[in-house]
Image (cartoon, rainbow, N blue to C red; front, side, top):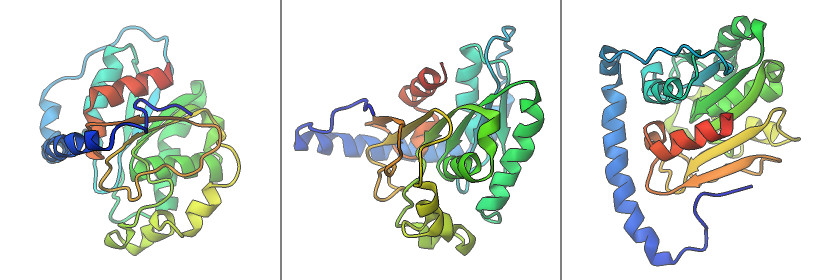
Length: 235
């Protein structure tokens, strides 16, 4: 298990980080709201076909356009097939999100395994799909961005159908904690995540962990450091 920043930093250094994180998270939230405008800027065309397809899954109250910046970075690095999964997170429960992921990936994976990247609730749904719904047979590597794998104490503010997976004491957290991860897994998270409380990934066996400072929960979607960590994990 690895971290980008040591945990034993001087305590006063955290006071310098928090205001910076808050400011960047406000910017990230504004970018999320305005993300559909990014469609006006064409994505780069990639000729090389040497990398497996990548599937991106957004989080709670999100939408596929929030993943467009990450897709742009991946395309610039040579990924010619990048697909974004969309779902109504205010209406779907975990099983329905997993089914949407399966419906997207299964026809693409006919030609070979894919890589999977999920953000927030999307990361938890991806992991559930891999471990409980047989999705591991389609996937080469999995990367989690800000996934609430141990739940979050903010779960009462989400629809009740999501409580079994977001409640830290819910049944899905205990179920997914059993056994090793079925595919190579990288956890990328913010040290100051205001939506995943407590901001820890849980006791996942055999995973690589990257902890980033100076970025918040939604900021992971636009952070160069997070994008670099995703590329390293998939490479």
